[in-house]
Amino acid sequence: MTTRTADRAPAAKRADIASREWKGPWRRYDIVKEGVIALVVVSILTVLLAGLFSSPDEPPLTFQGWATSAPDNFYATAVQELAGTSTSAGYGPPNLWRSAITLFTYCCVSENSPLLRTEERPW
Image (cartoon, rainbow, N blue to C red; front, side):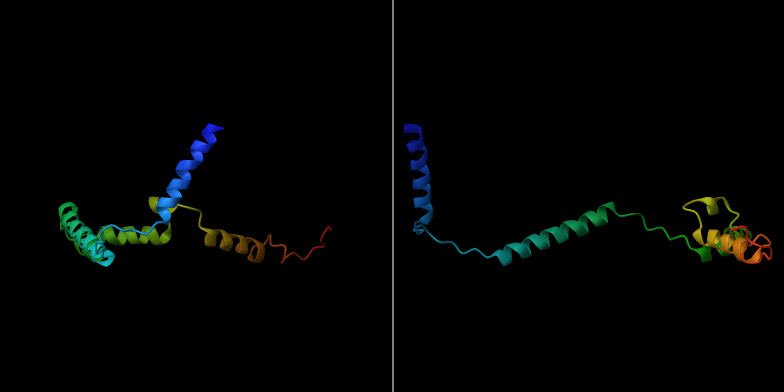
């Protein structure tokens, strides 16, 4: 029982201290000023590190530059890409539009189409 009484005494004393009015010295605290200083420091560090770790200033590769420097290669690649015969044309997910067009062609236009059959249906 003495331990419970001892545990309650510091808690009551702490609550007493927290409820008392502050009698010490007051200092002015400006949170806006501190926020502006932090923003300026972070901005300066960002600019310095971006300048230090940025990529070299090489001119970008463009389609116009490629077509000008190697027109035969550009033409051949463009034709292969548009025809879907290049090696990169098979990458990625399946072409759903092409599948839908193939299905439409089979179901509605081909000779095997159930819509074009004239014989009696077995069902």
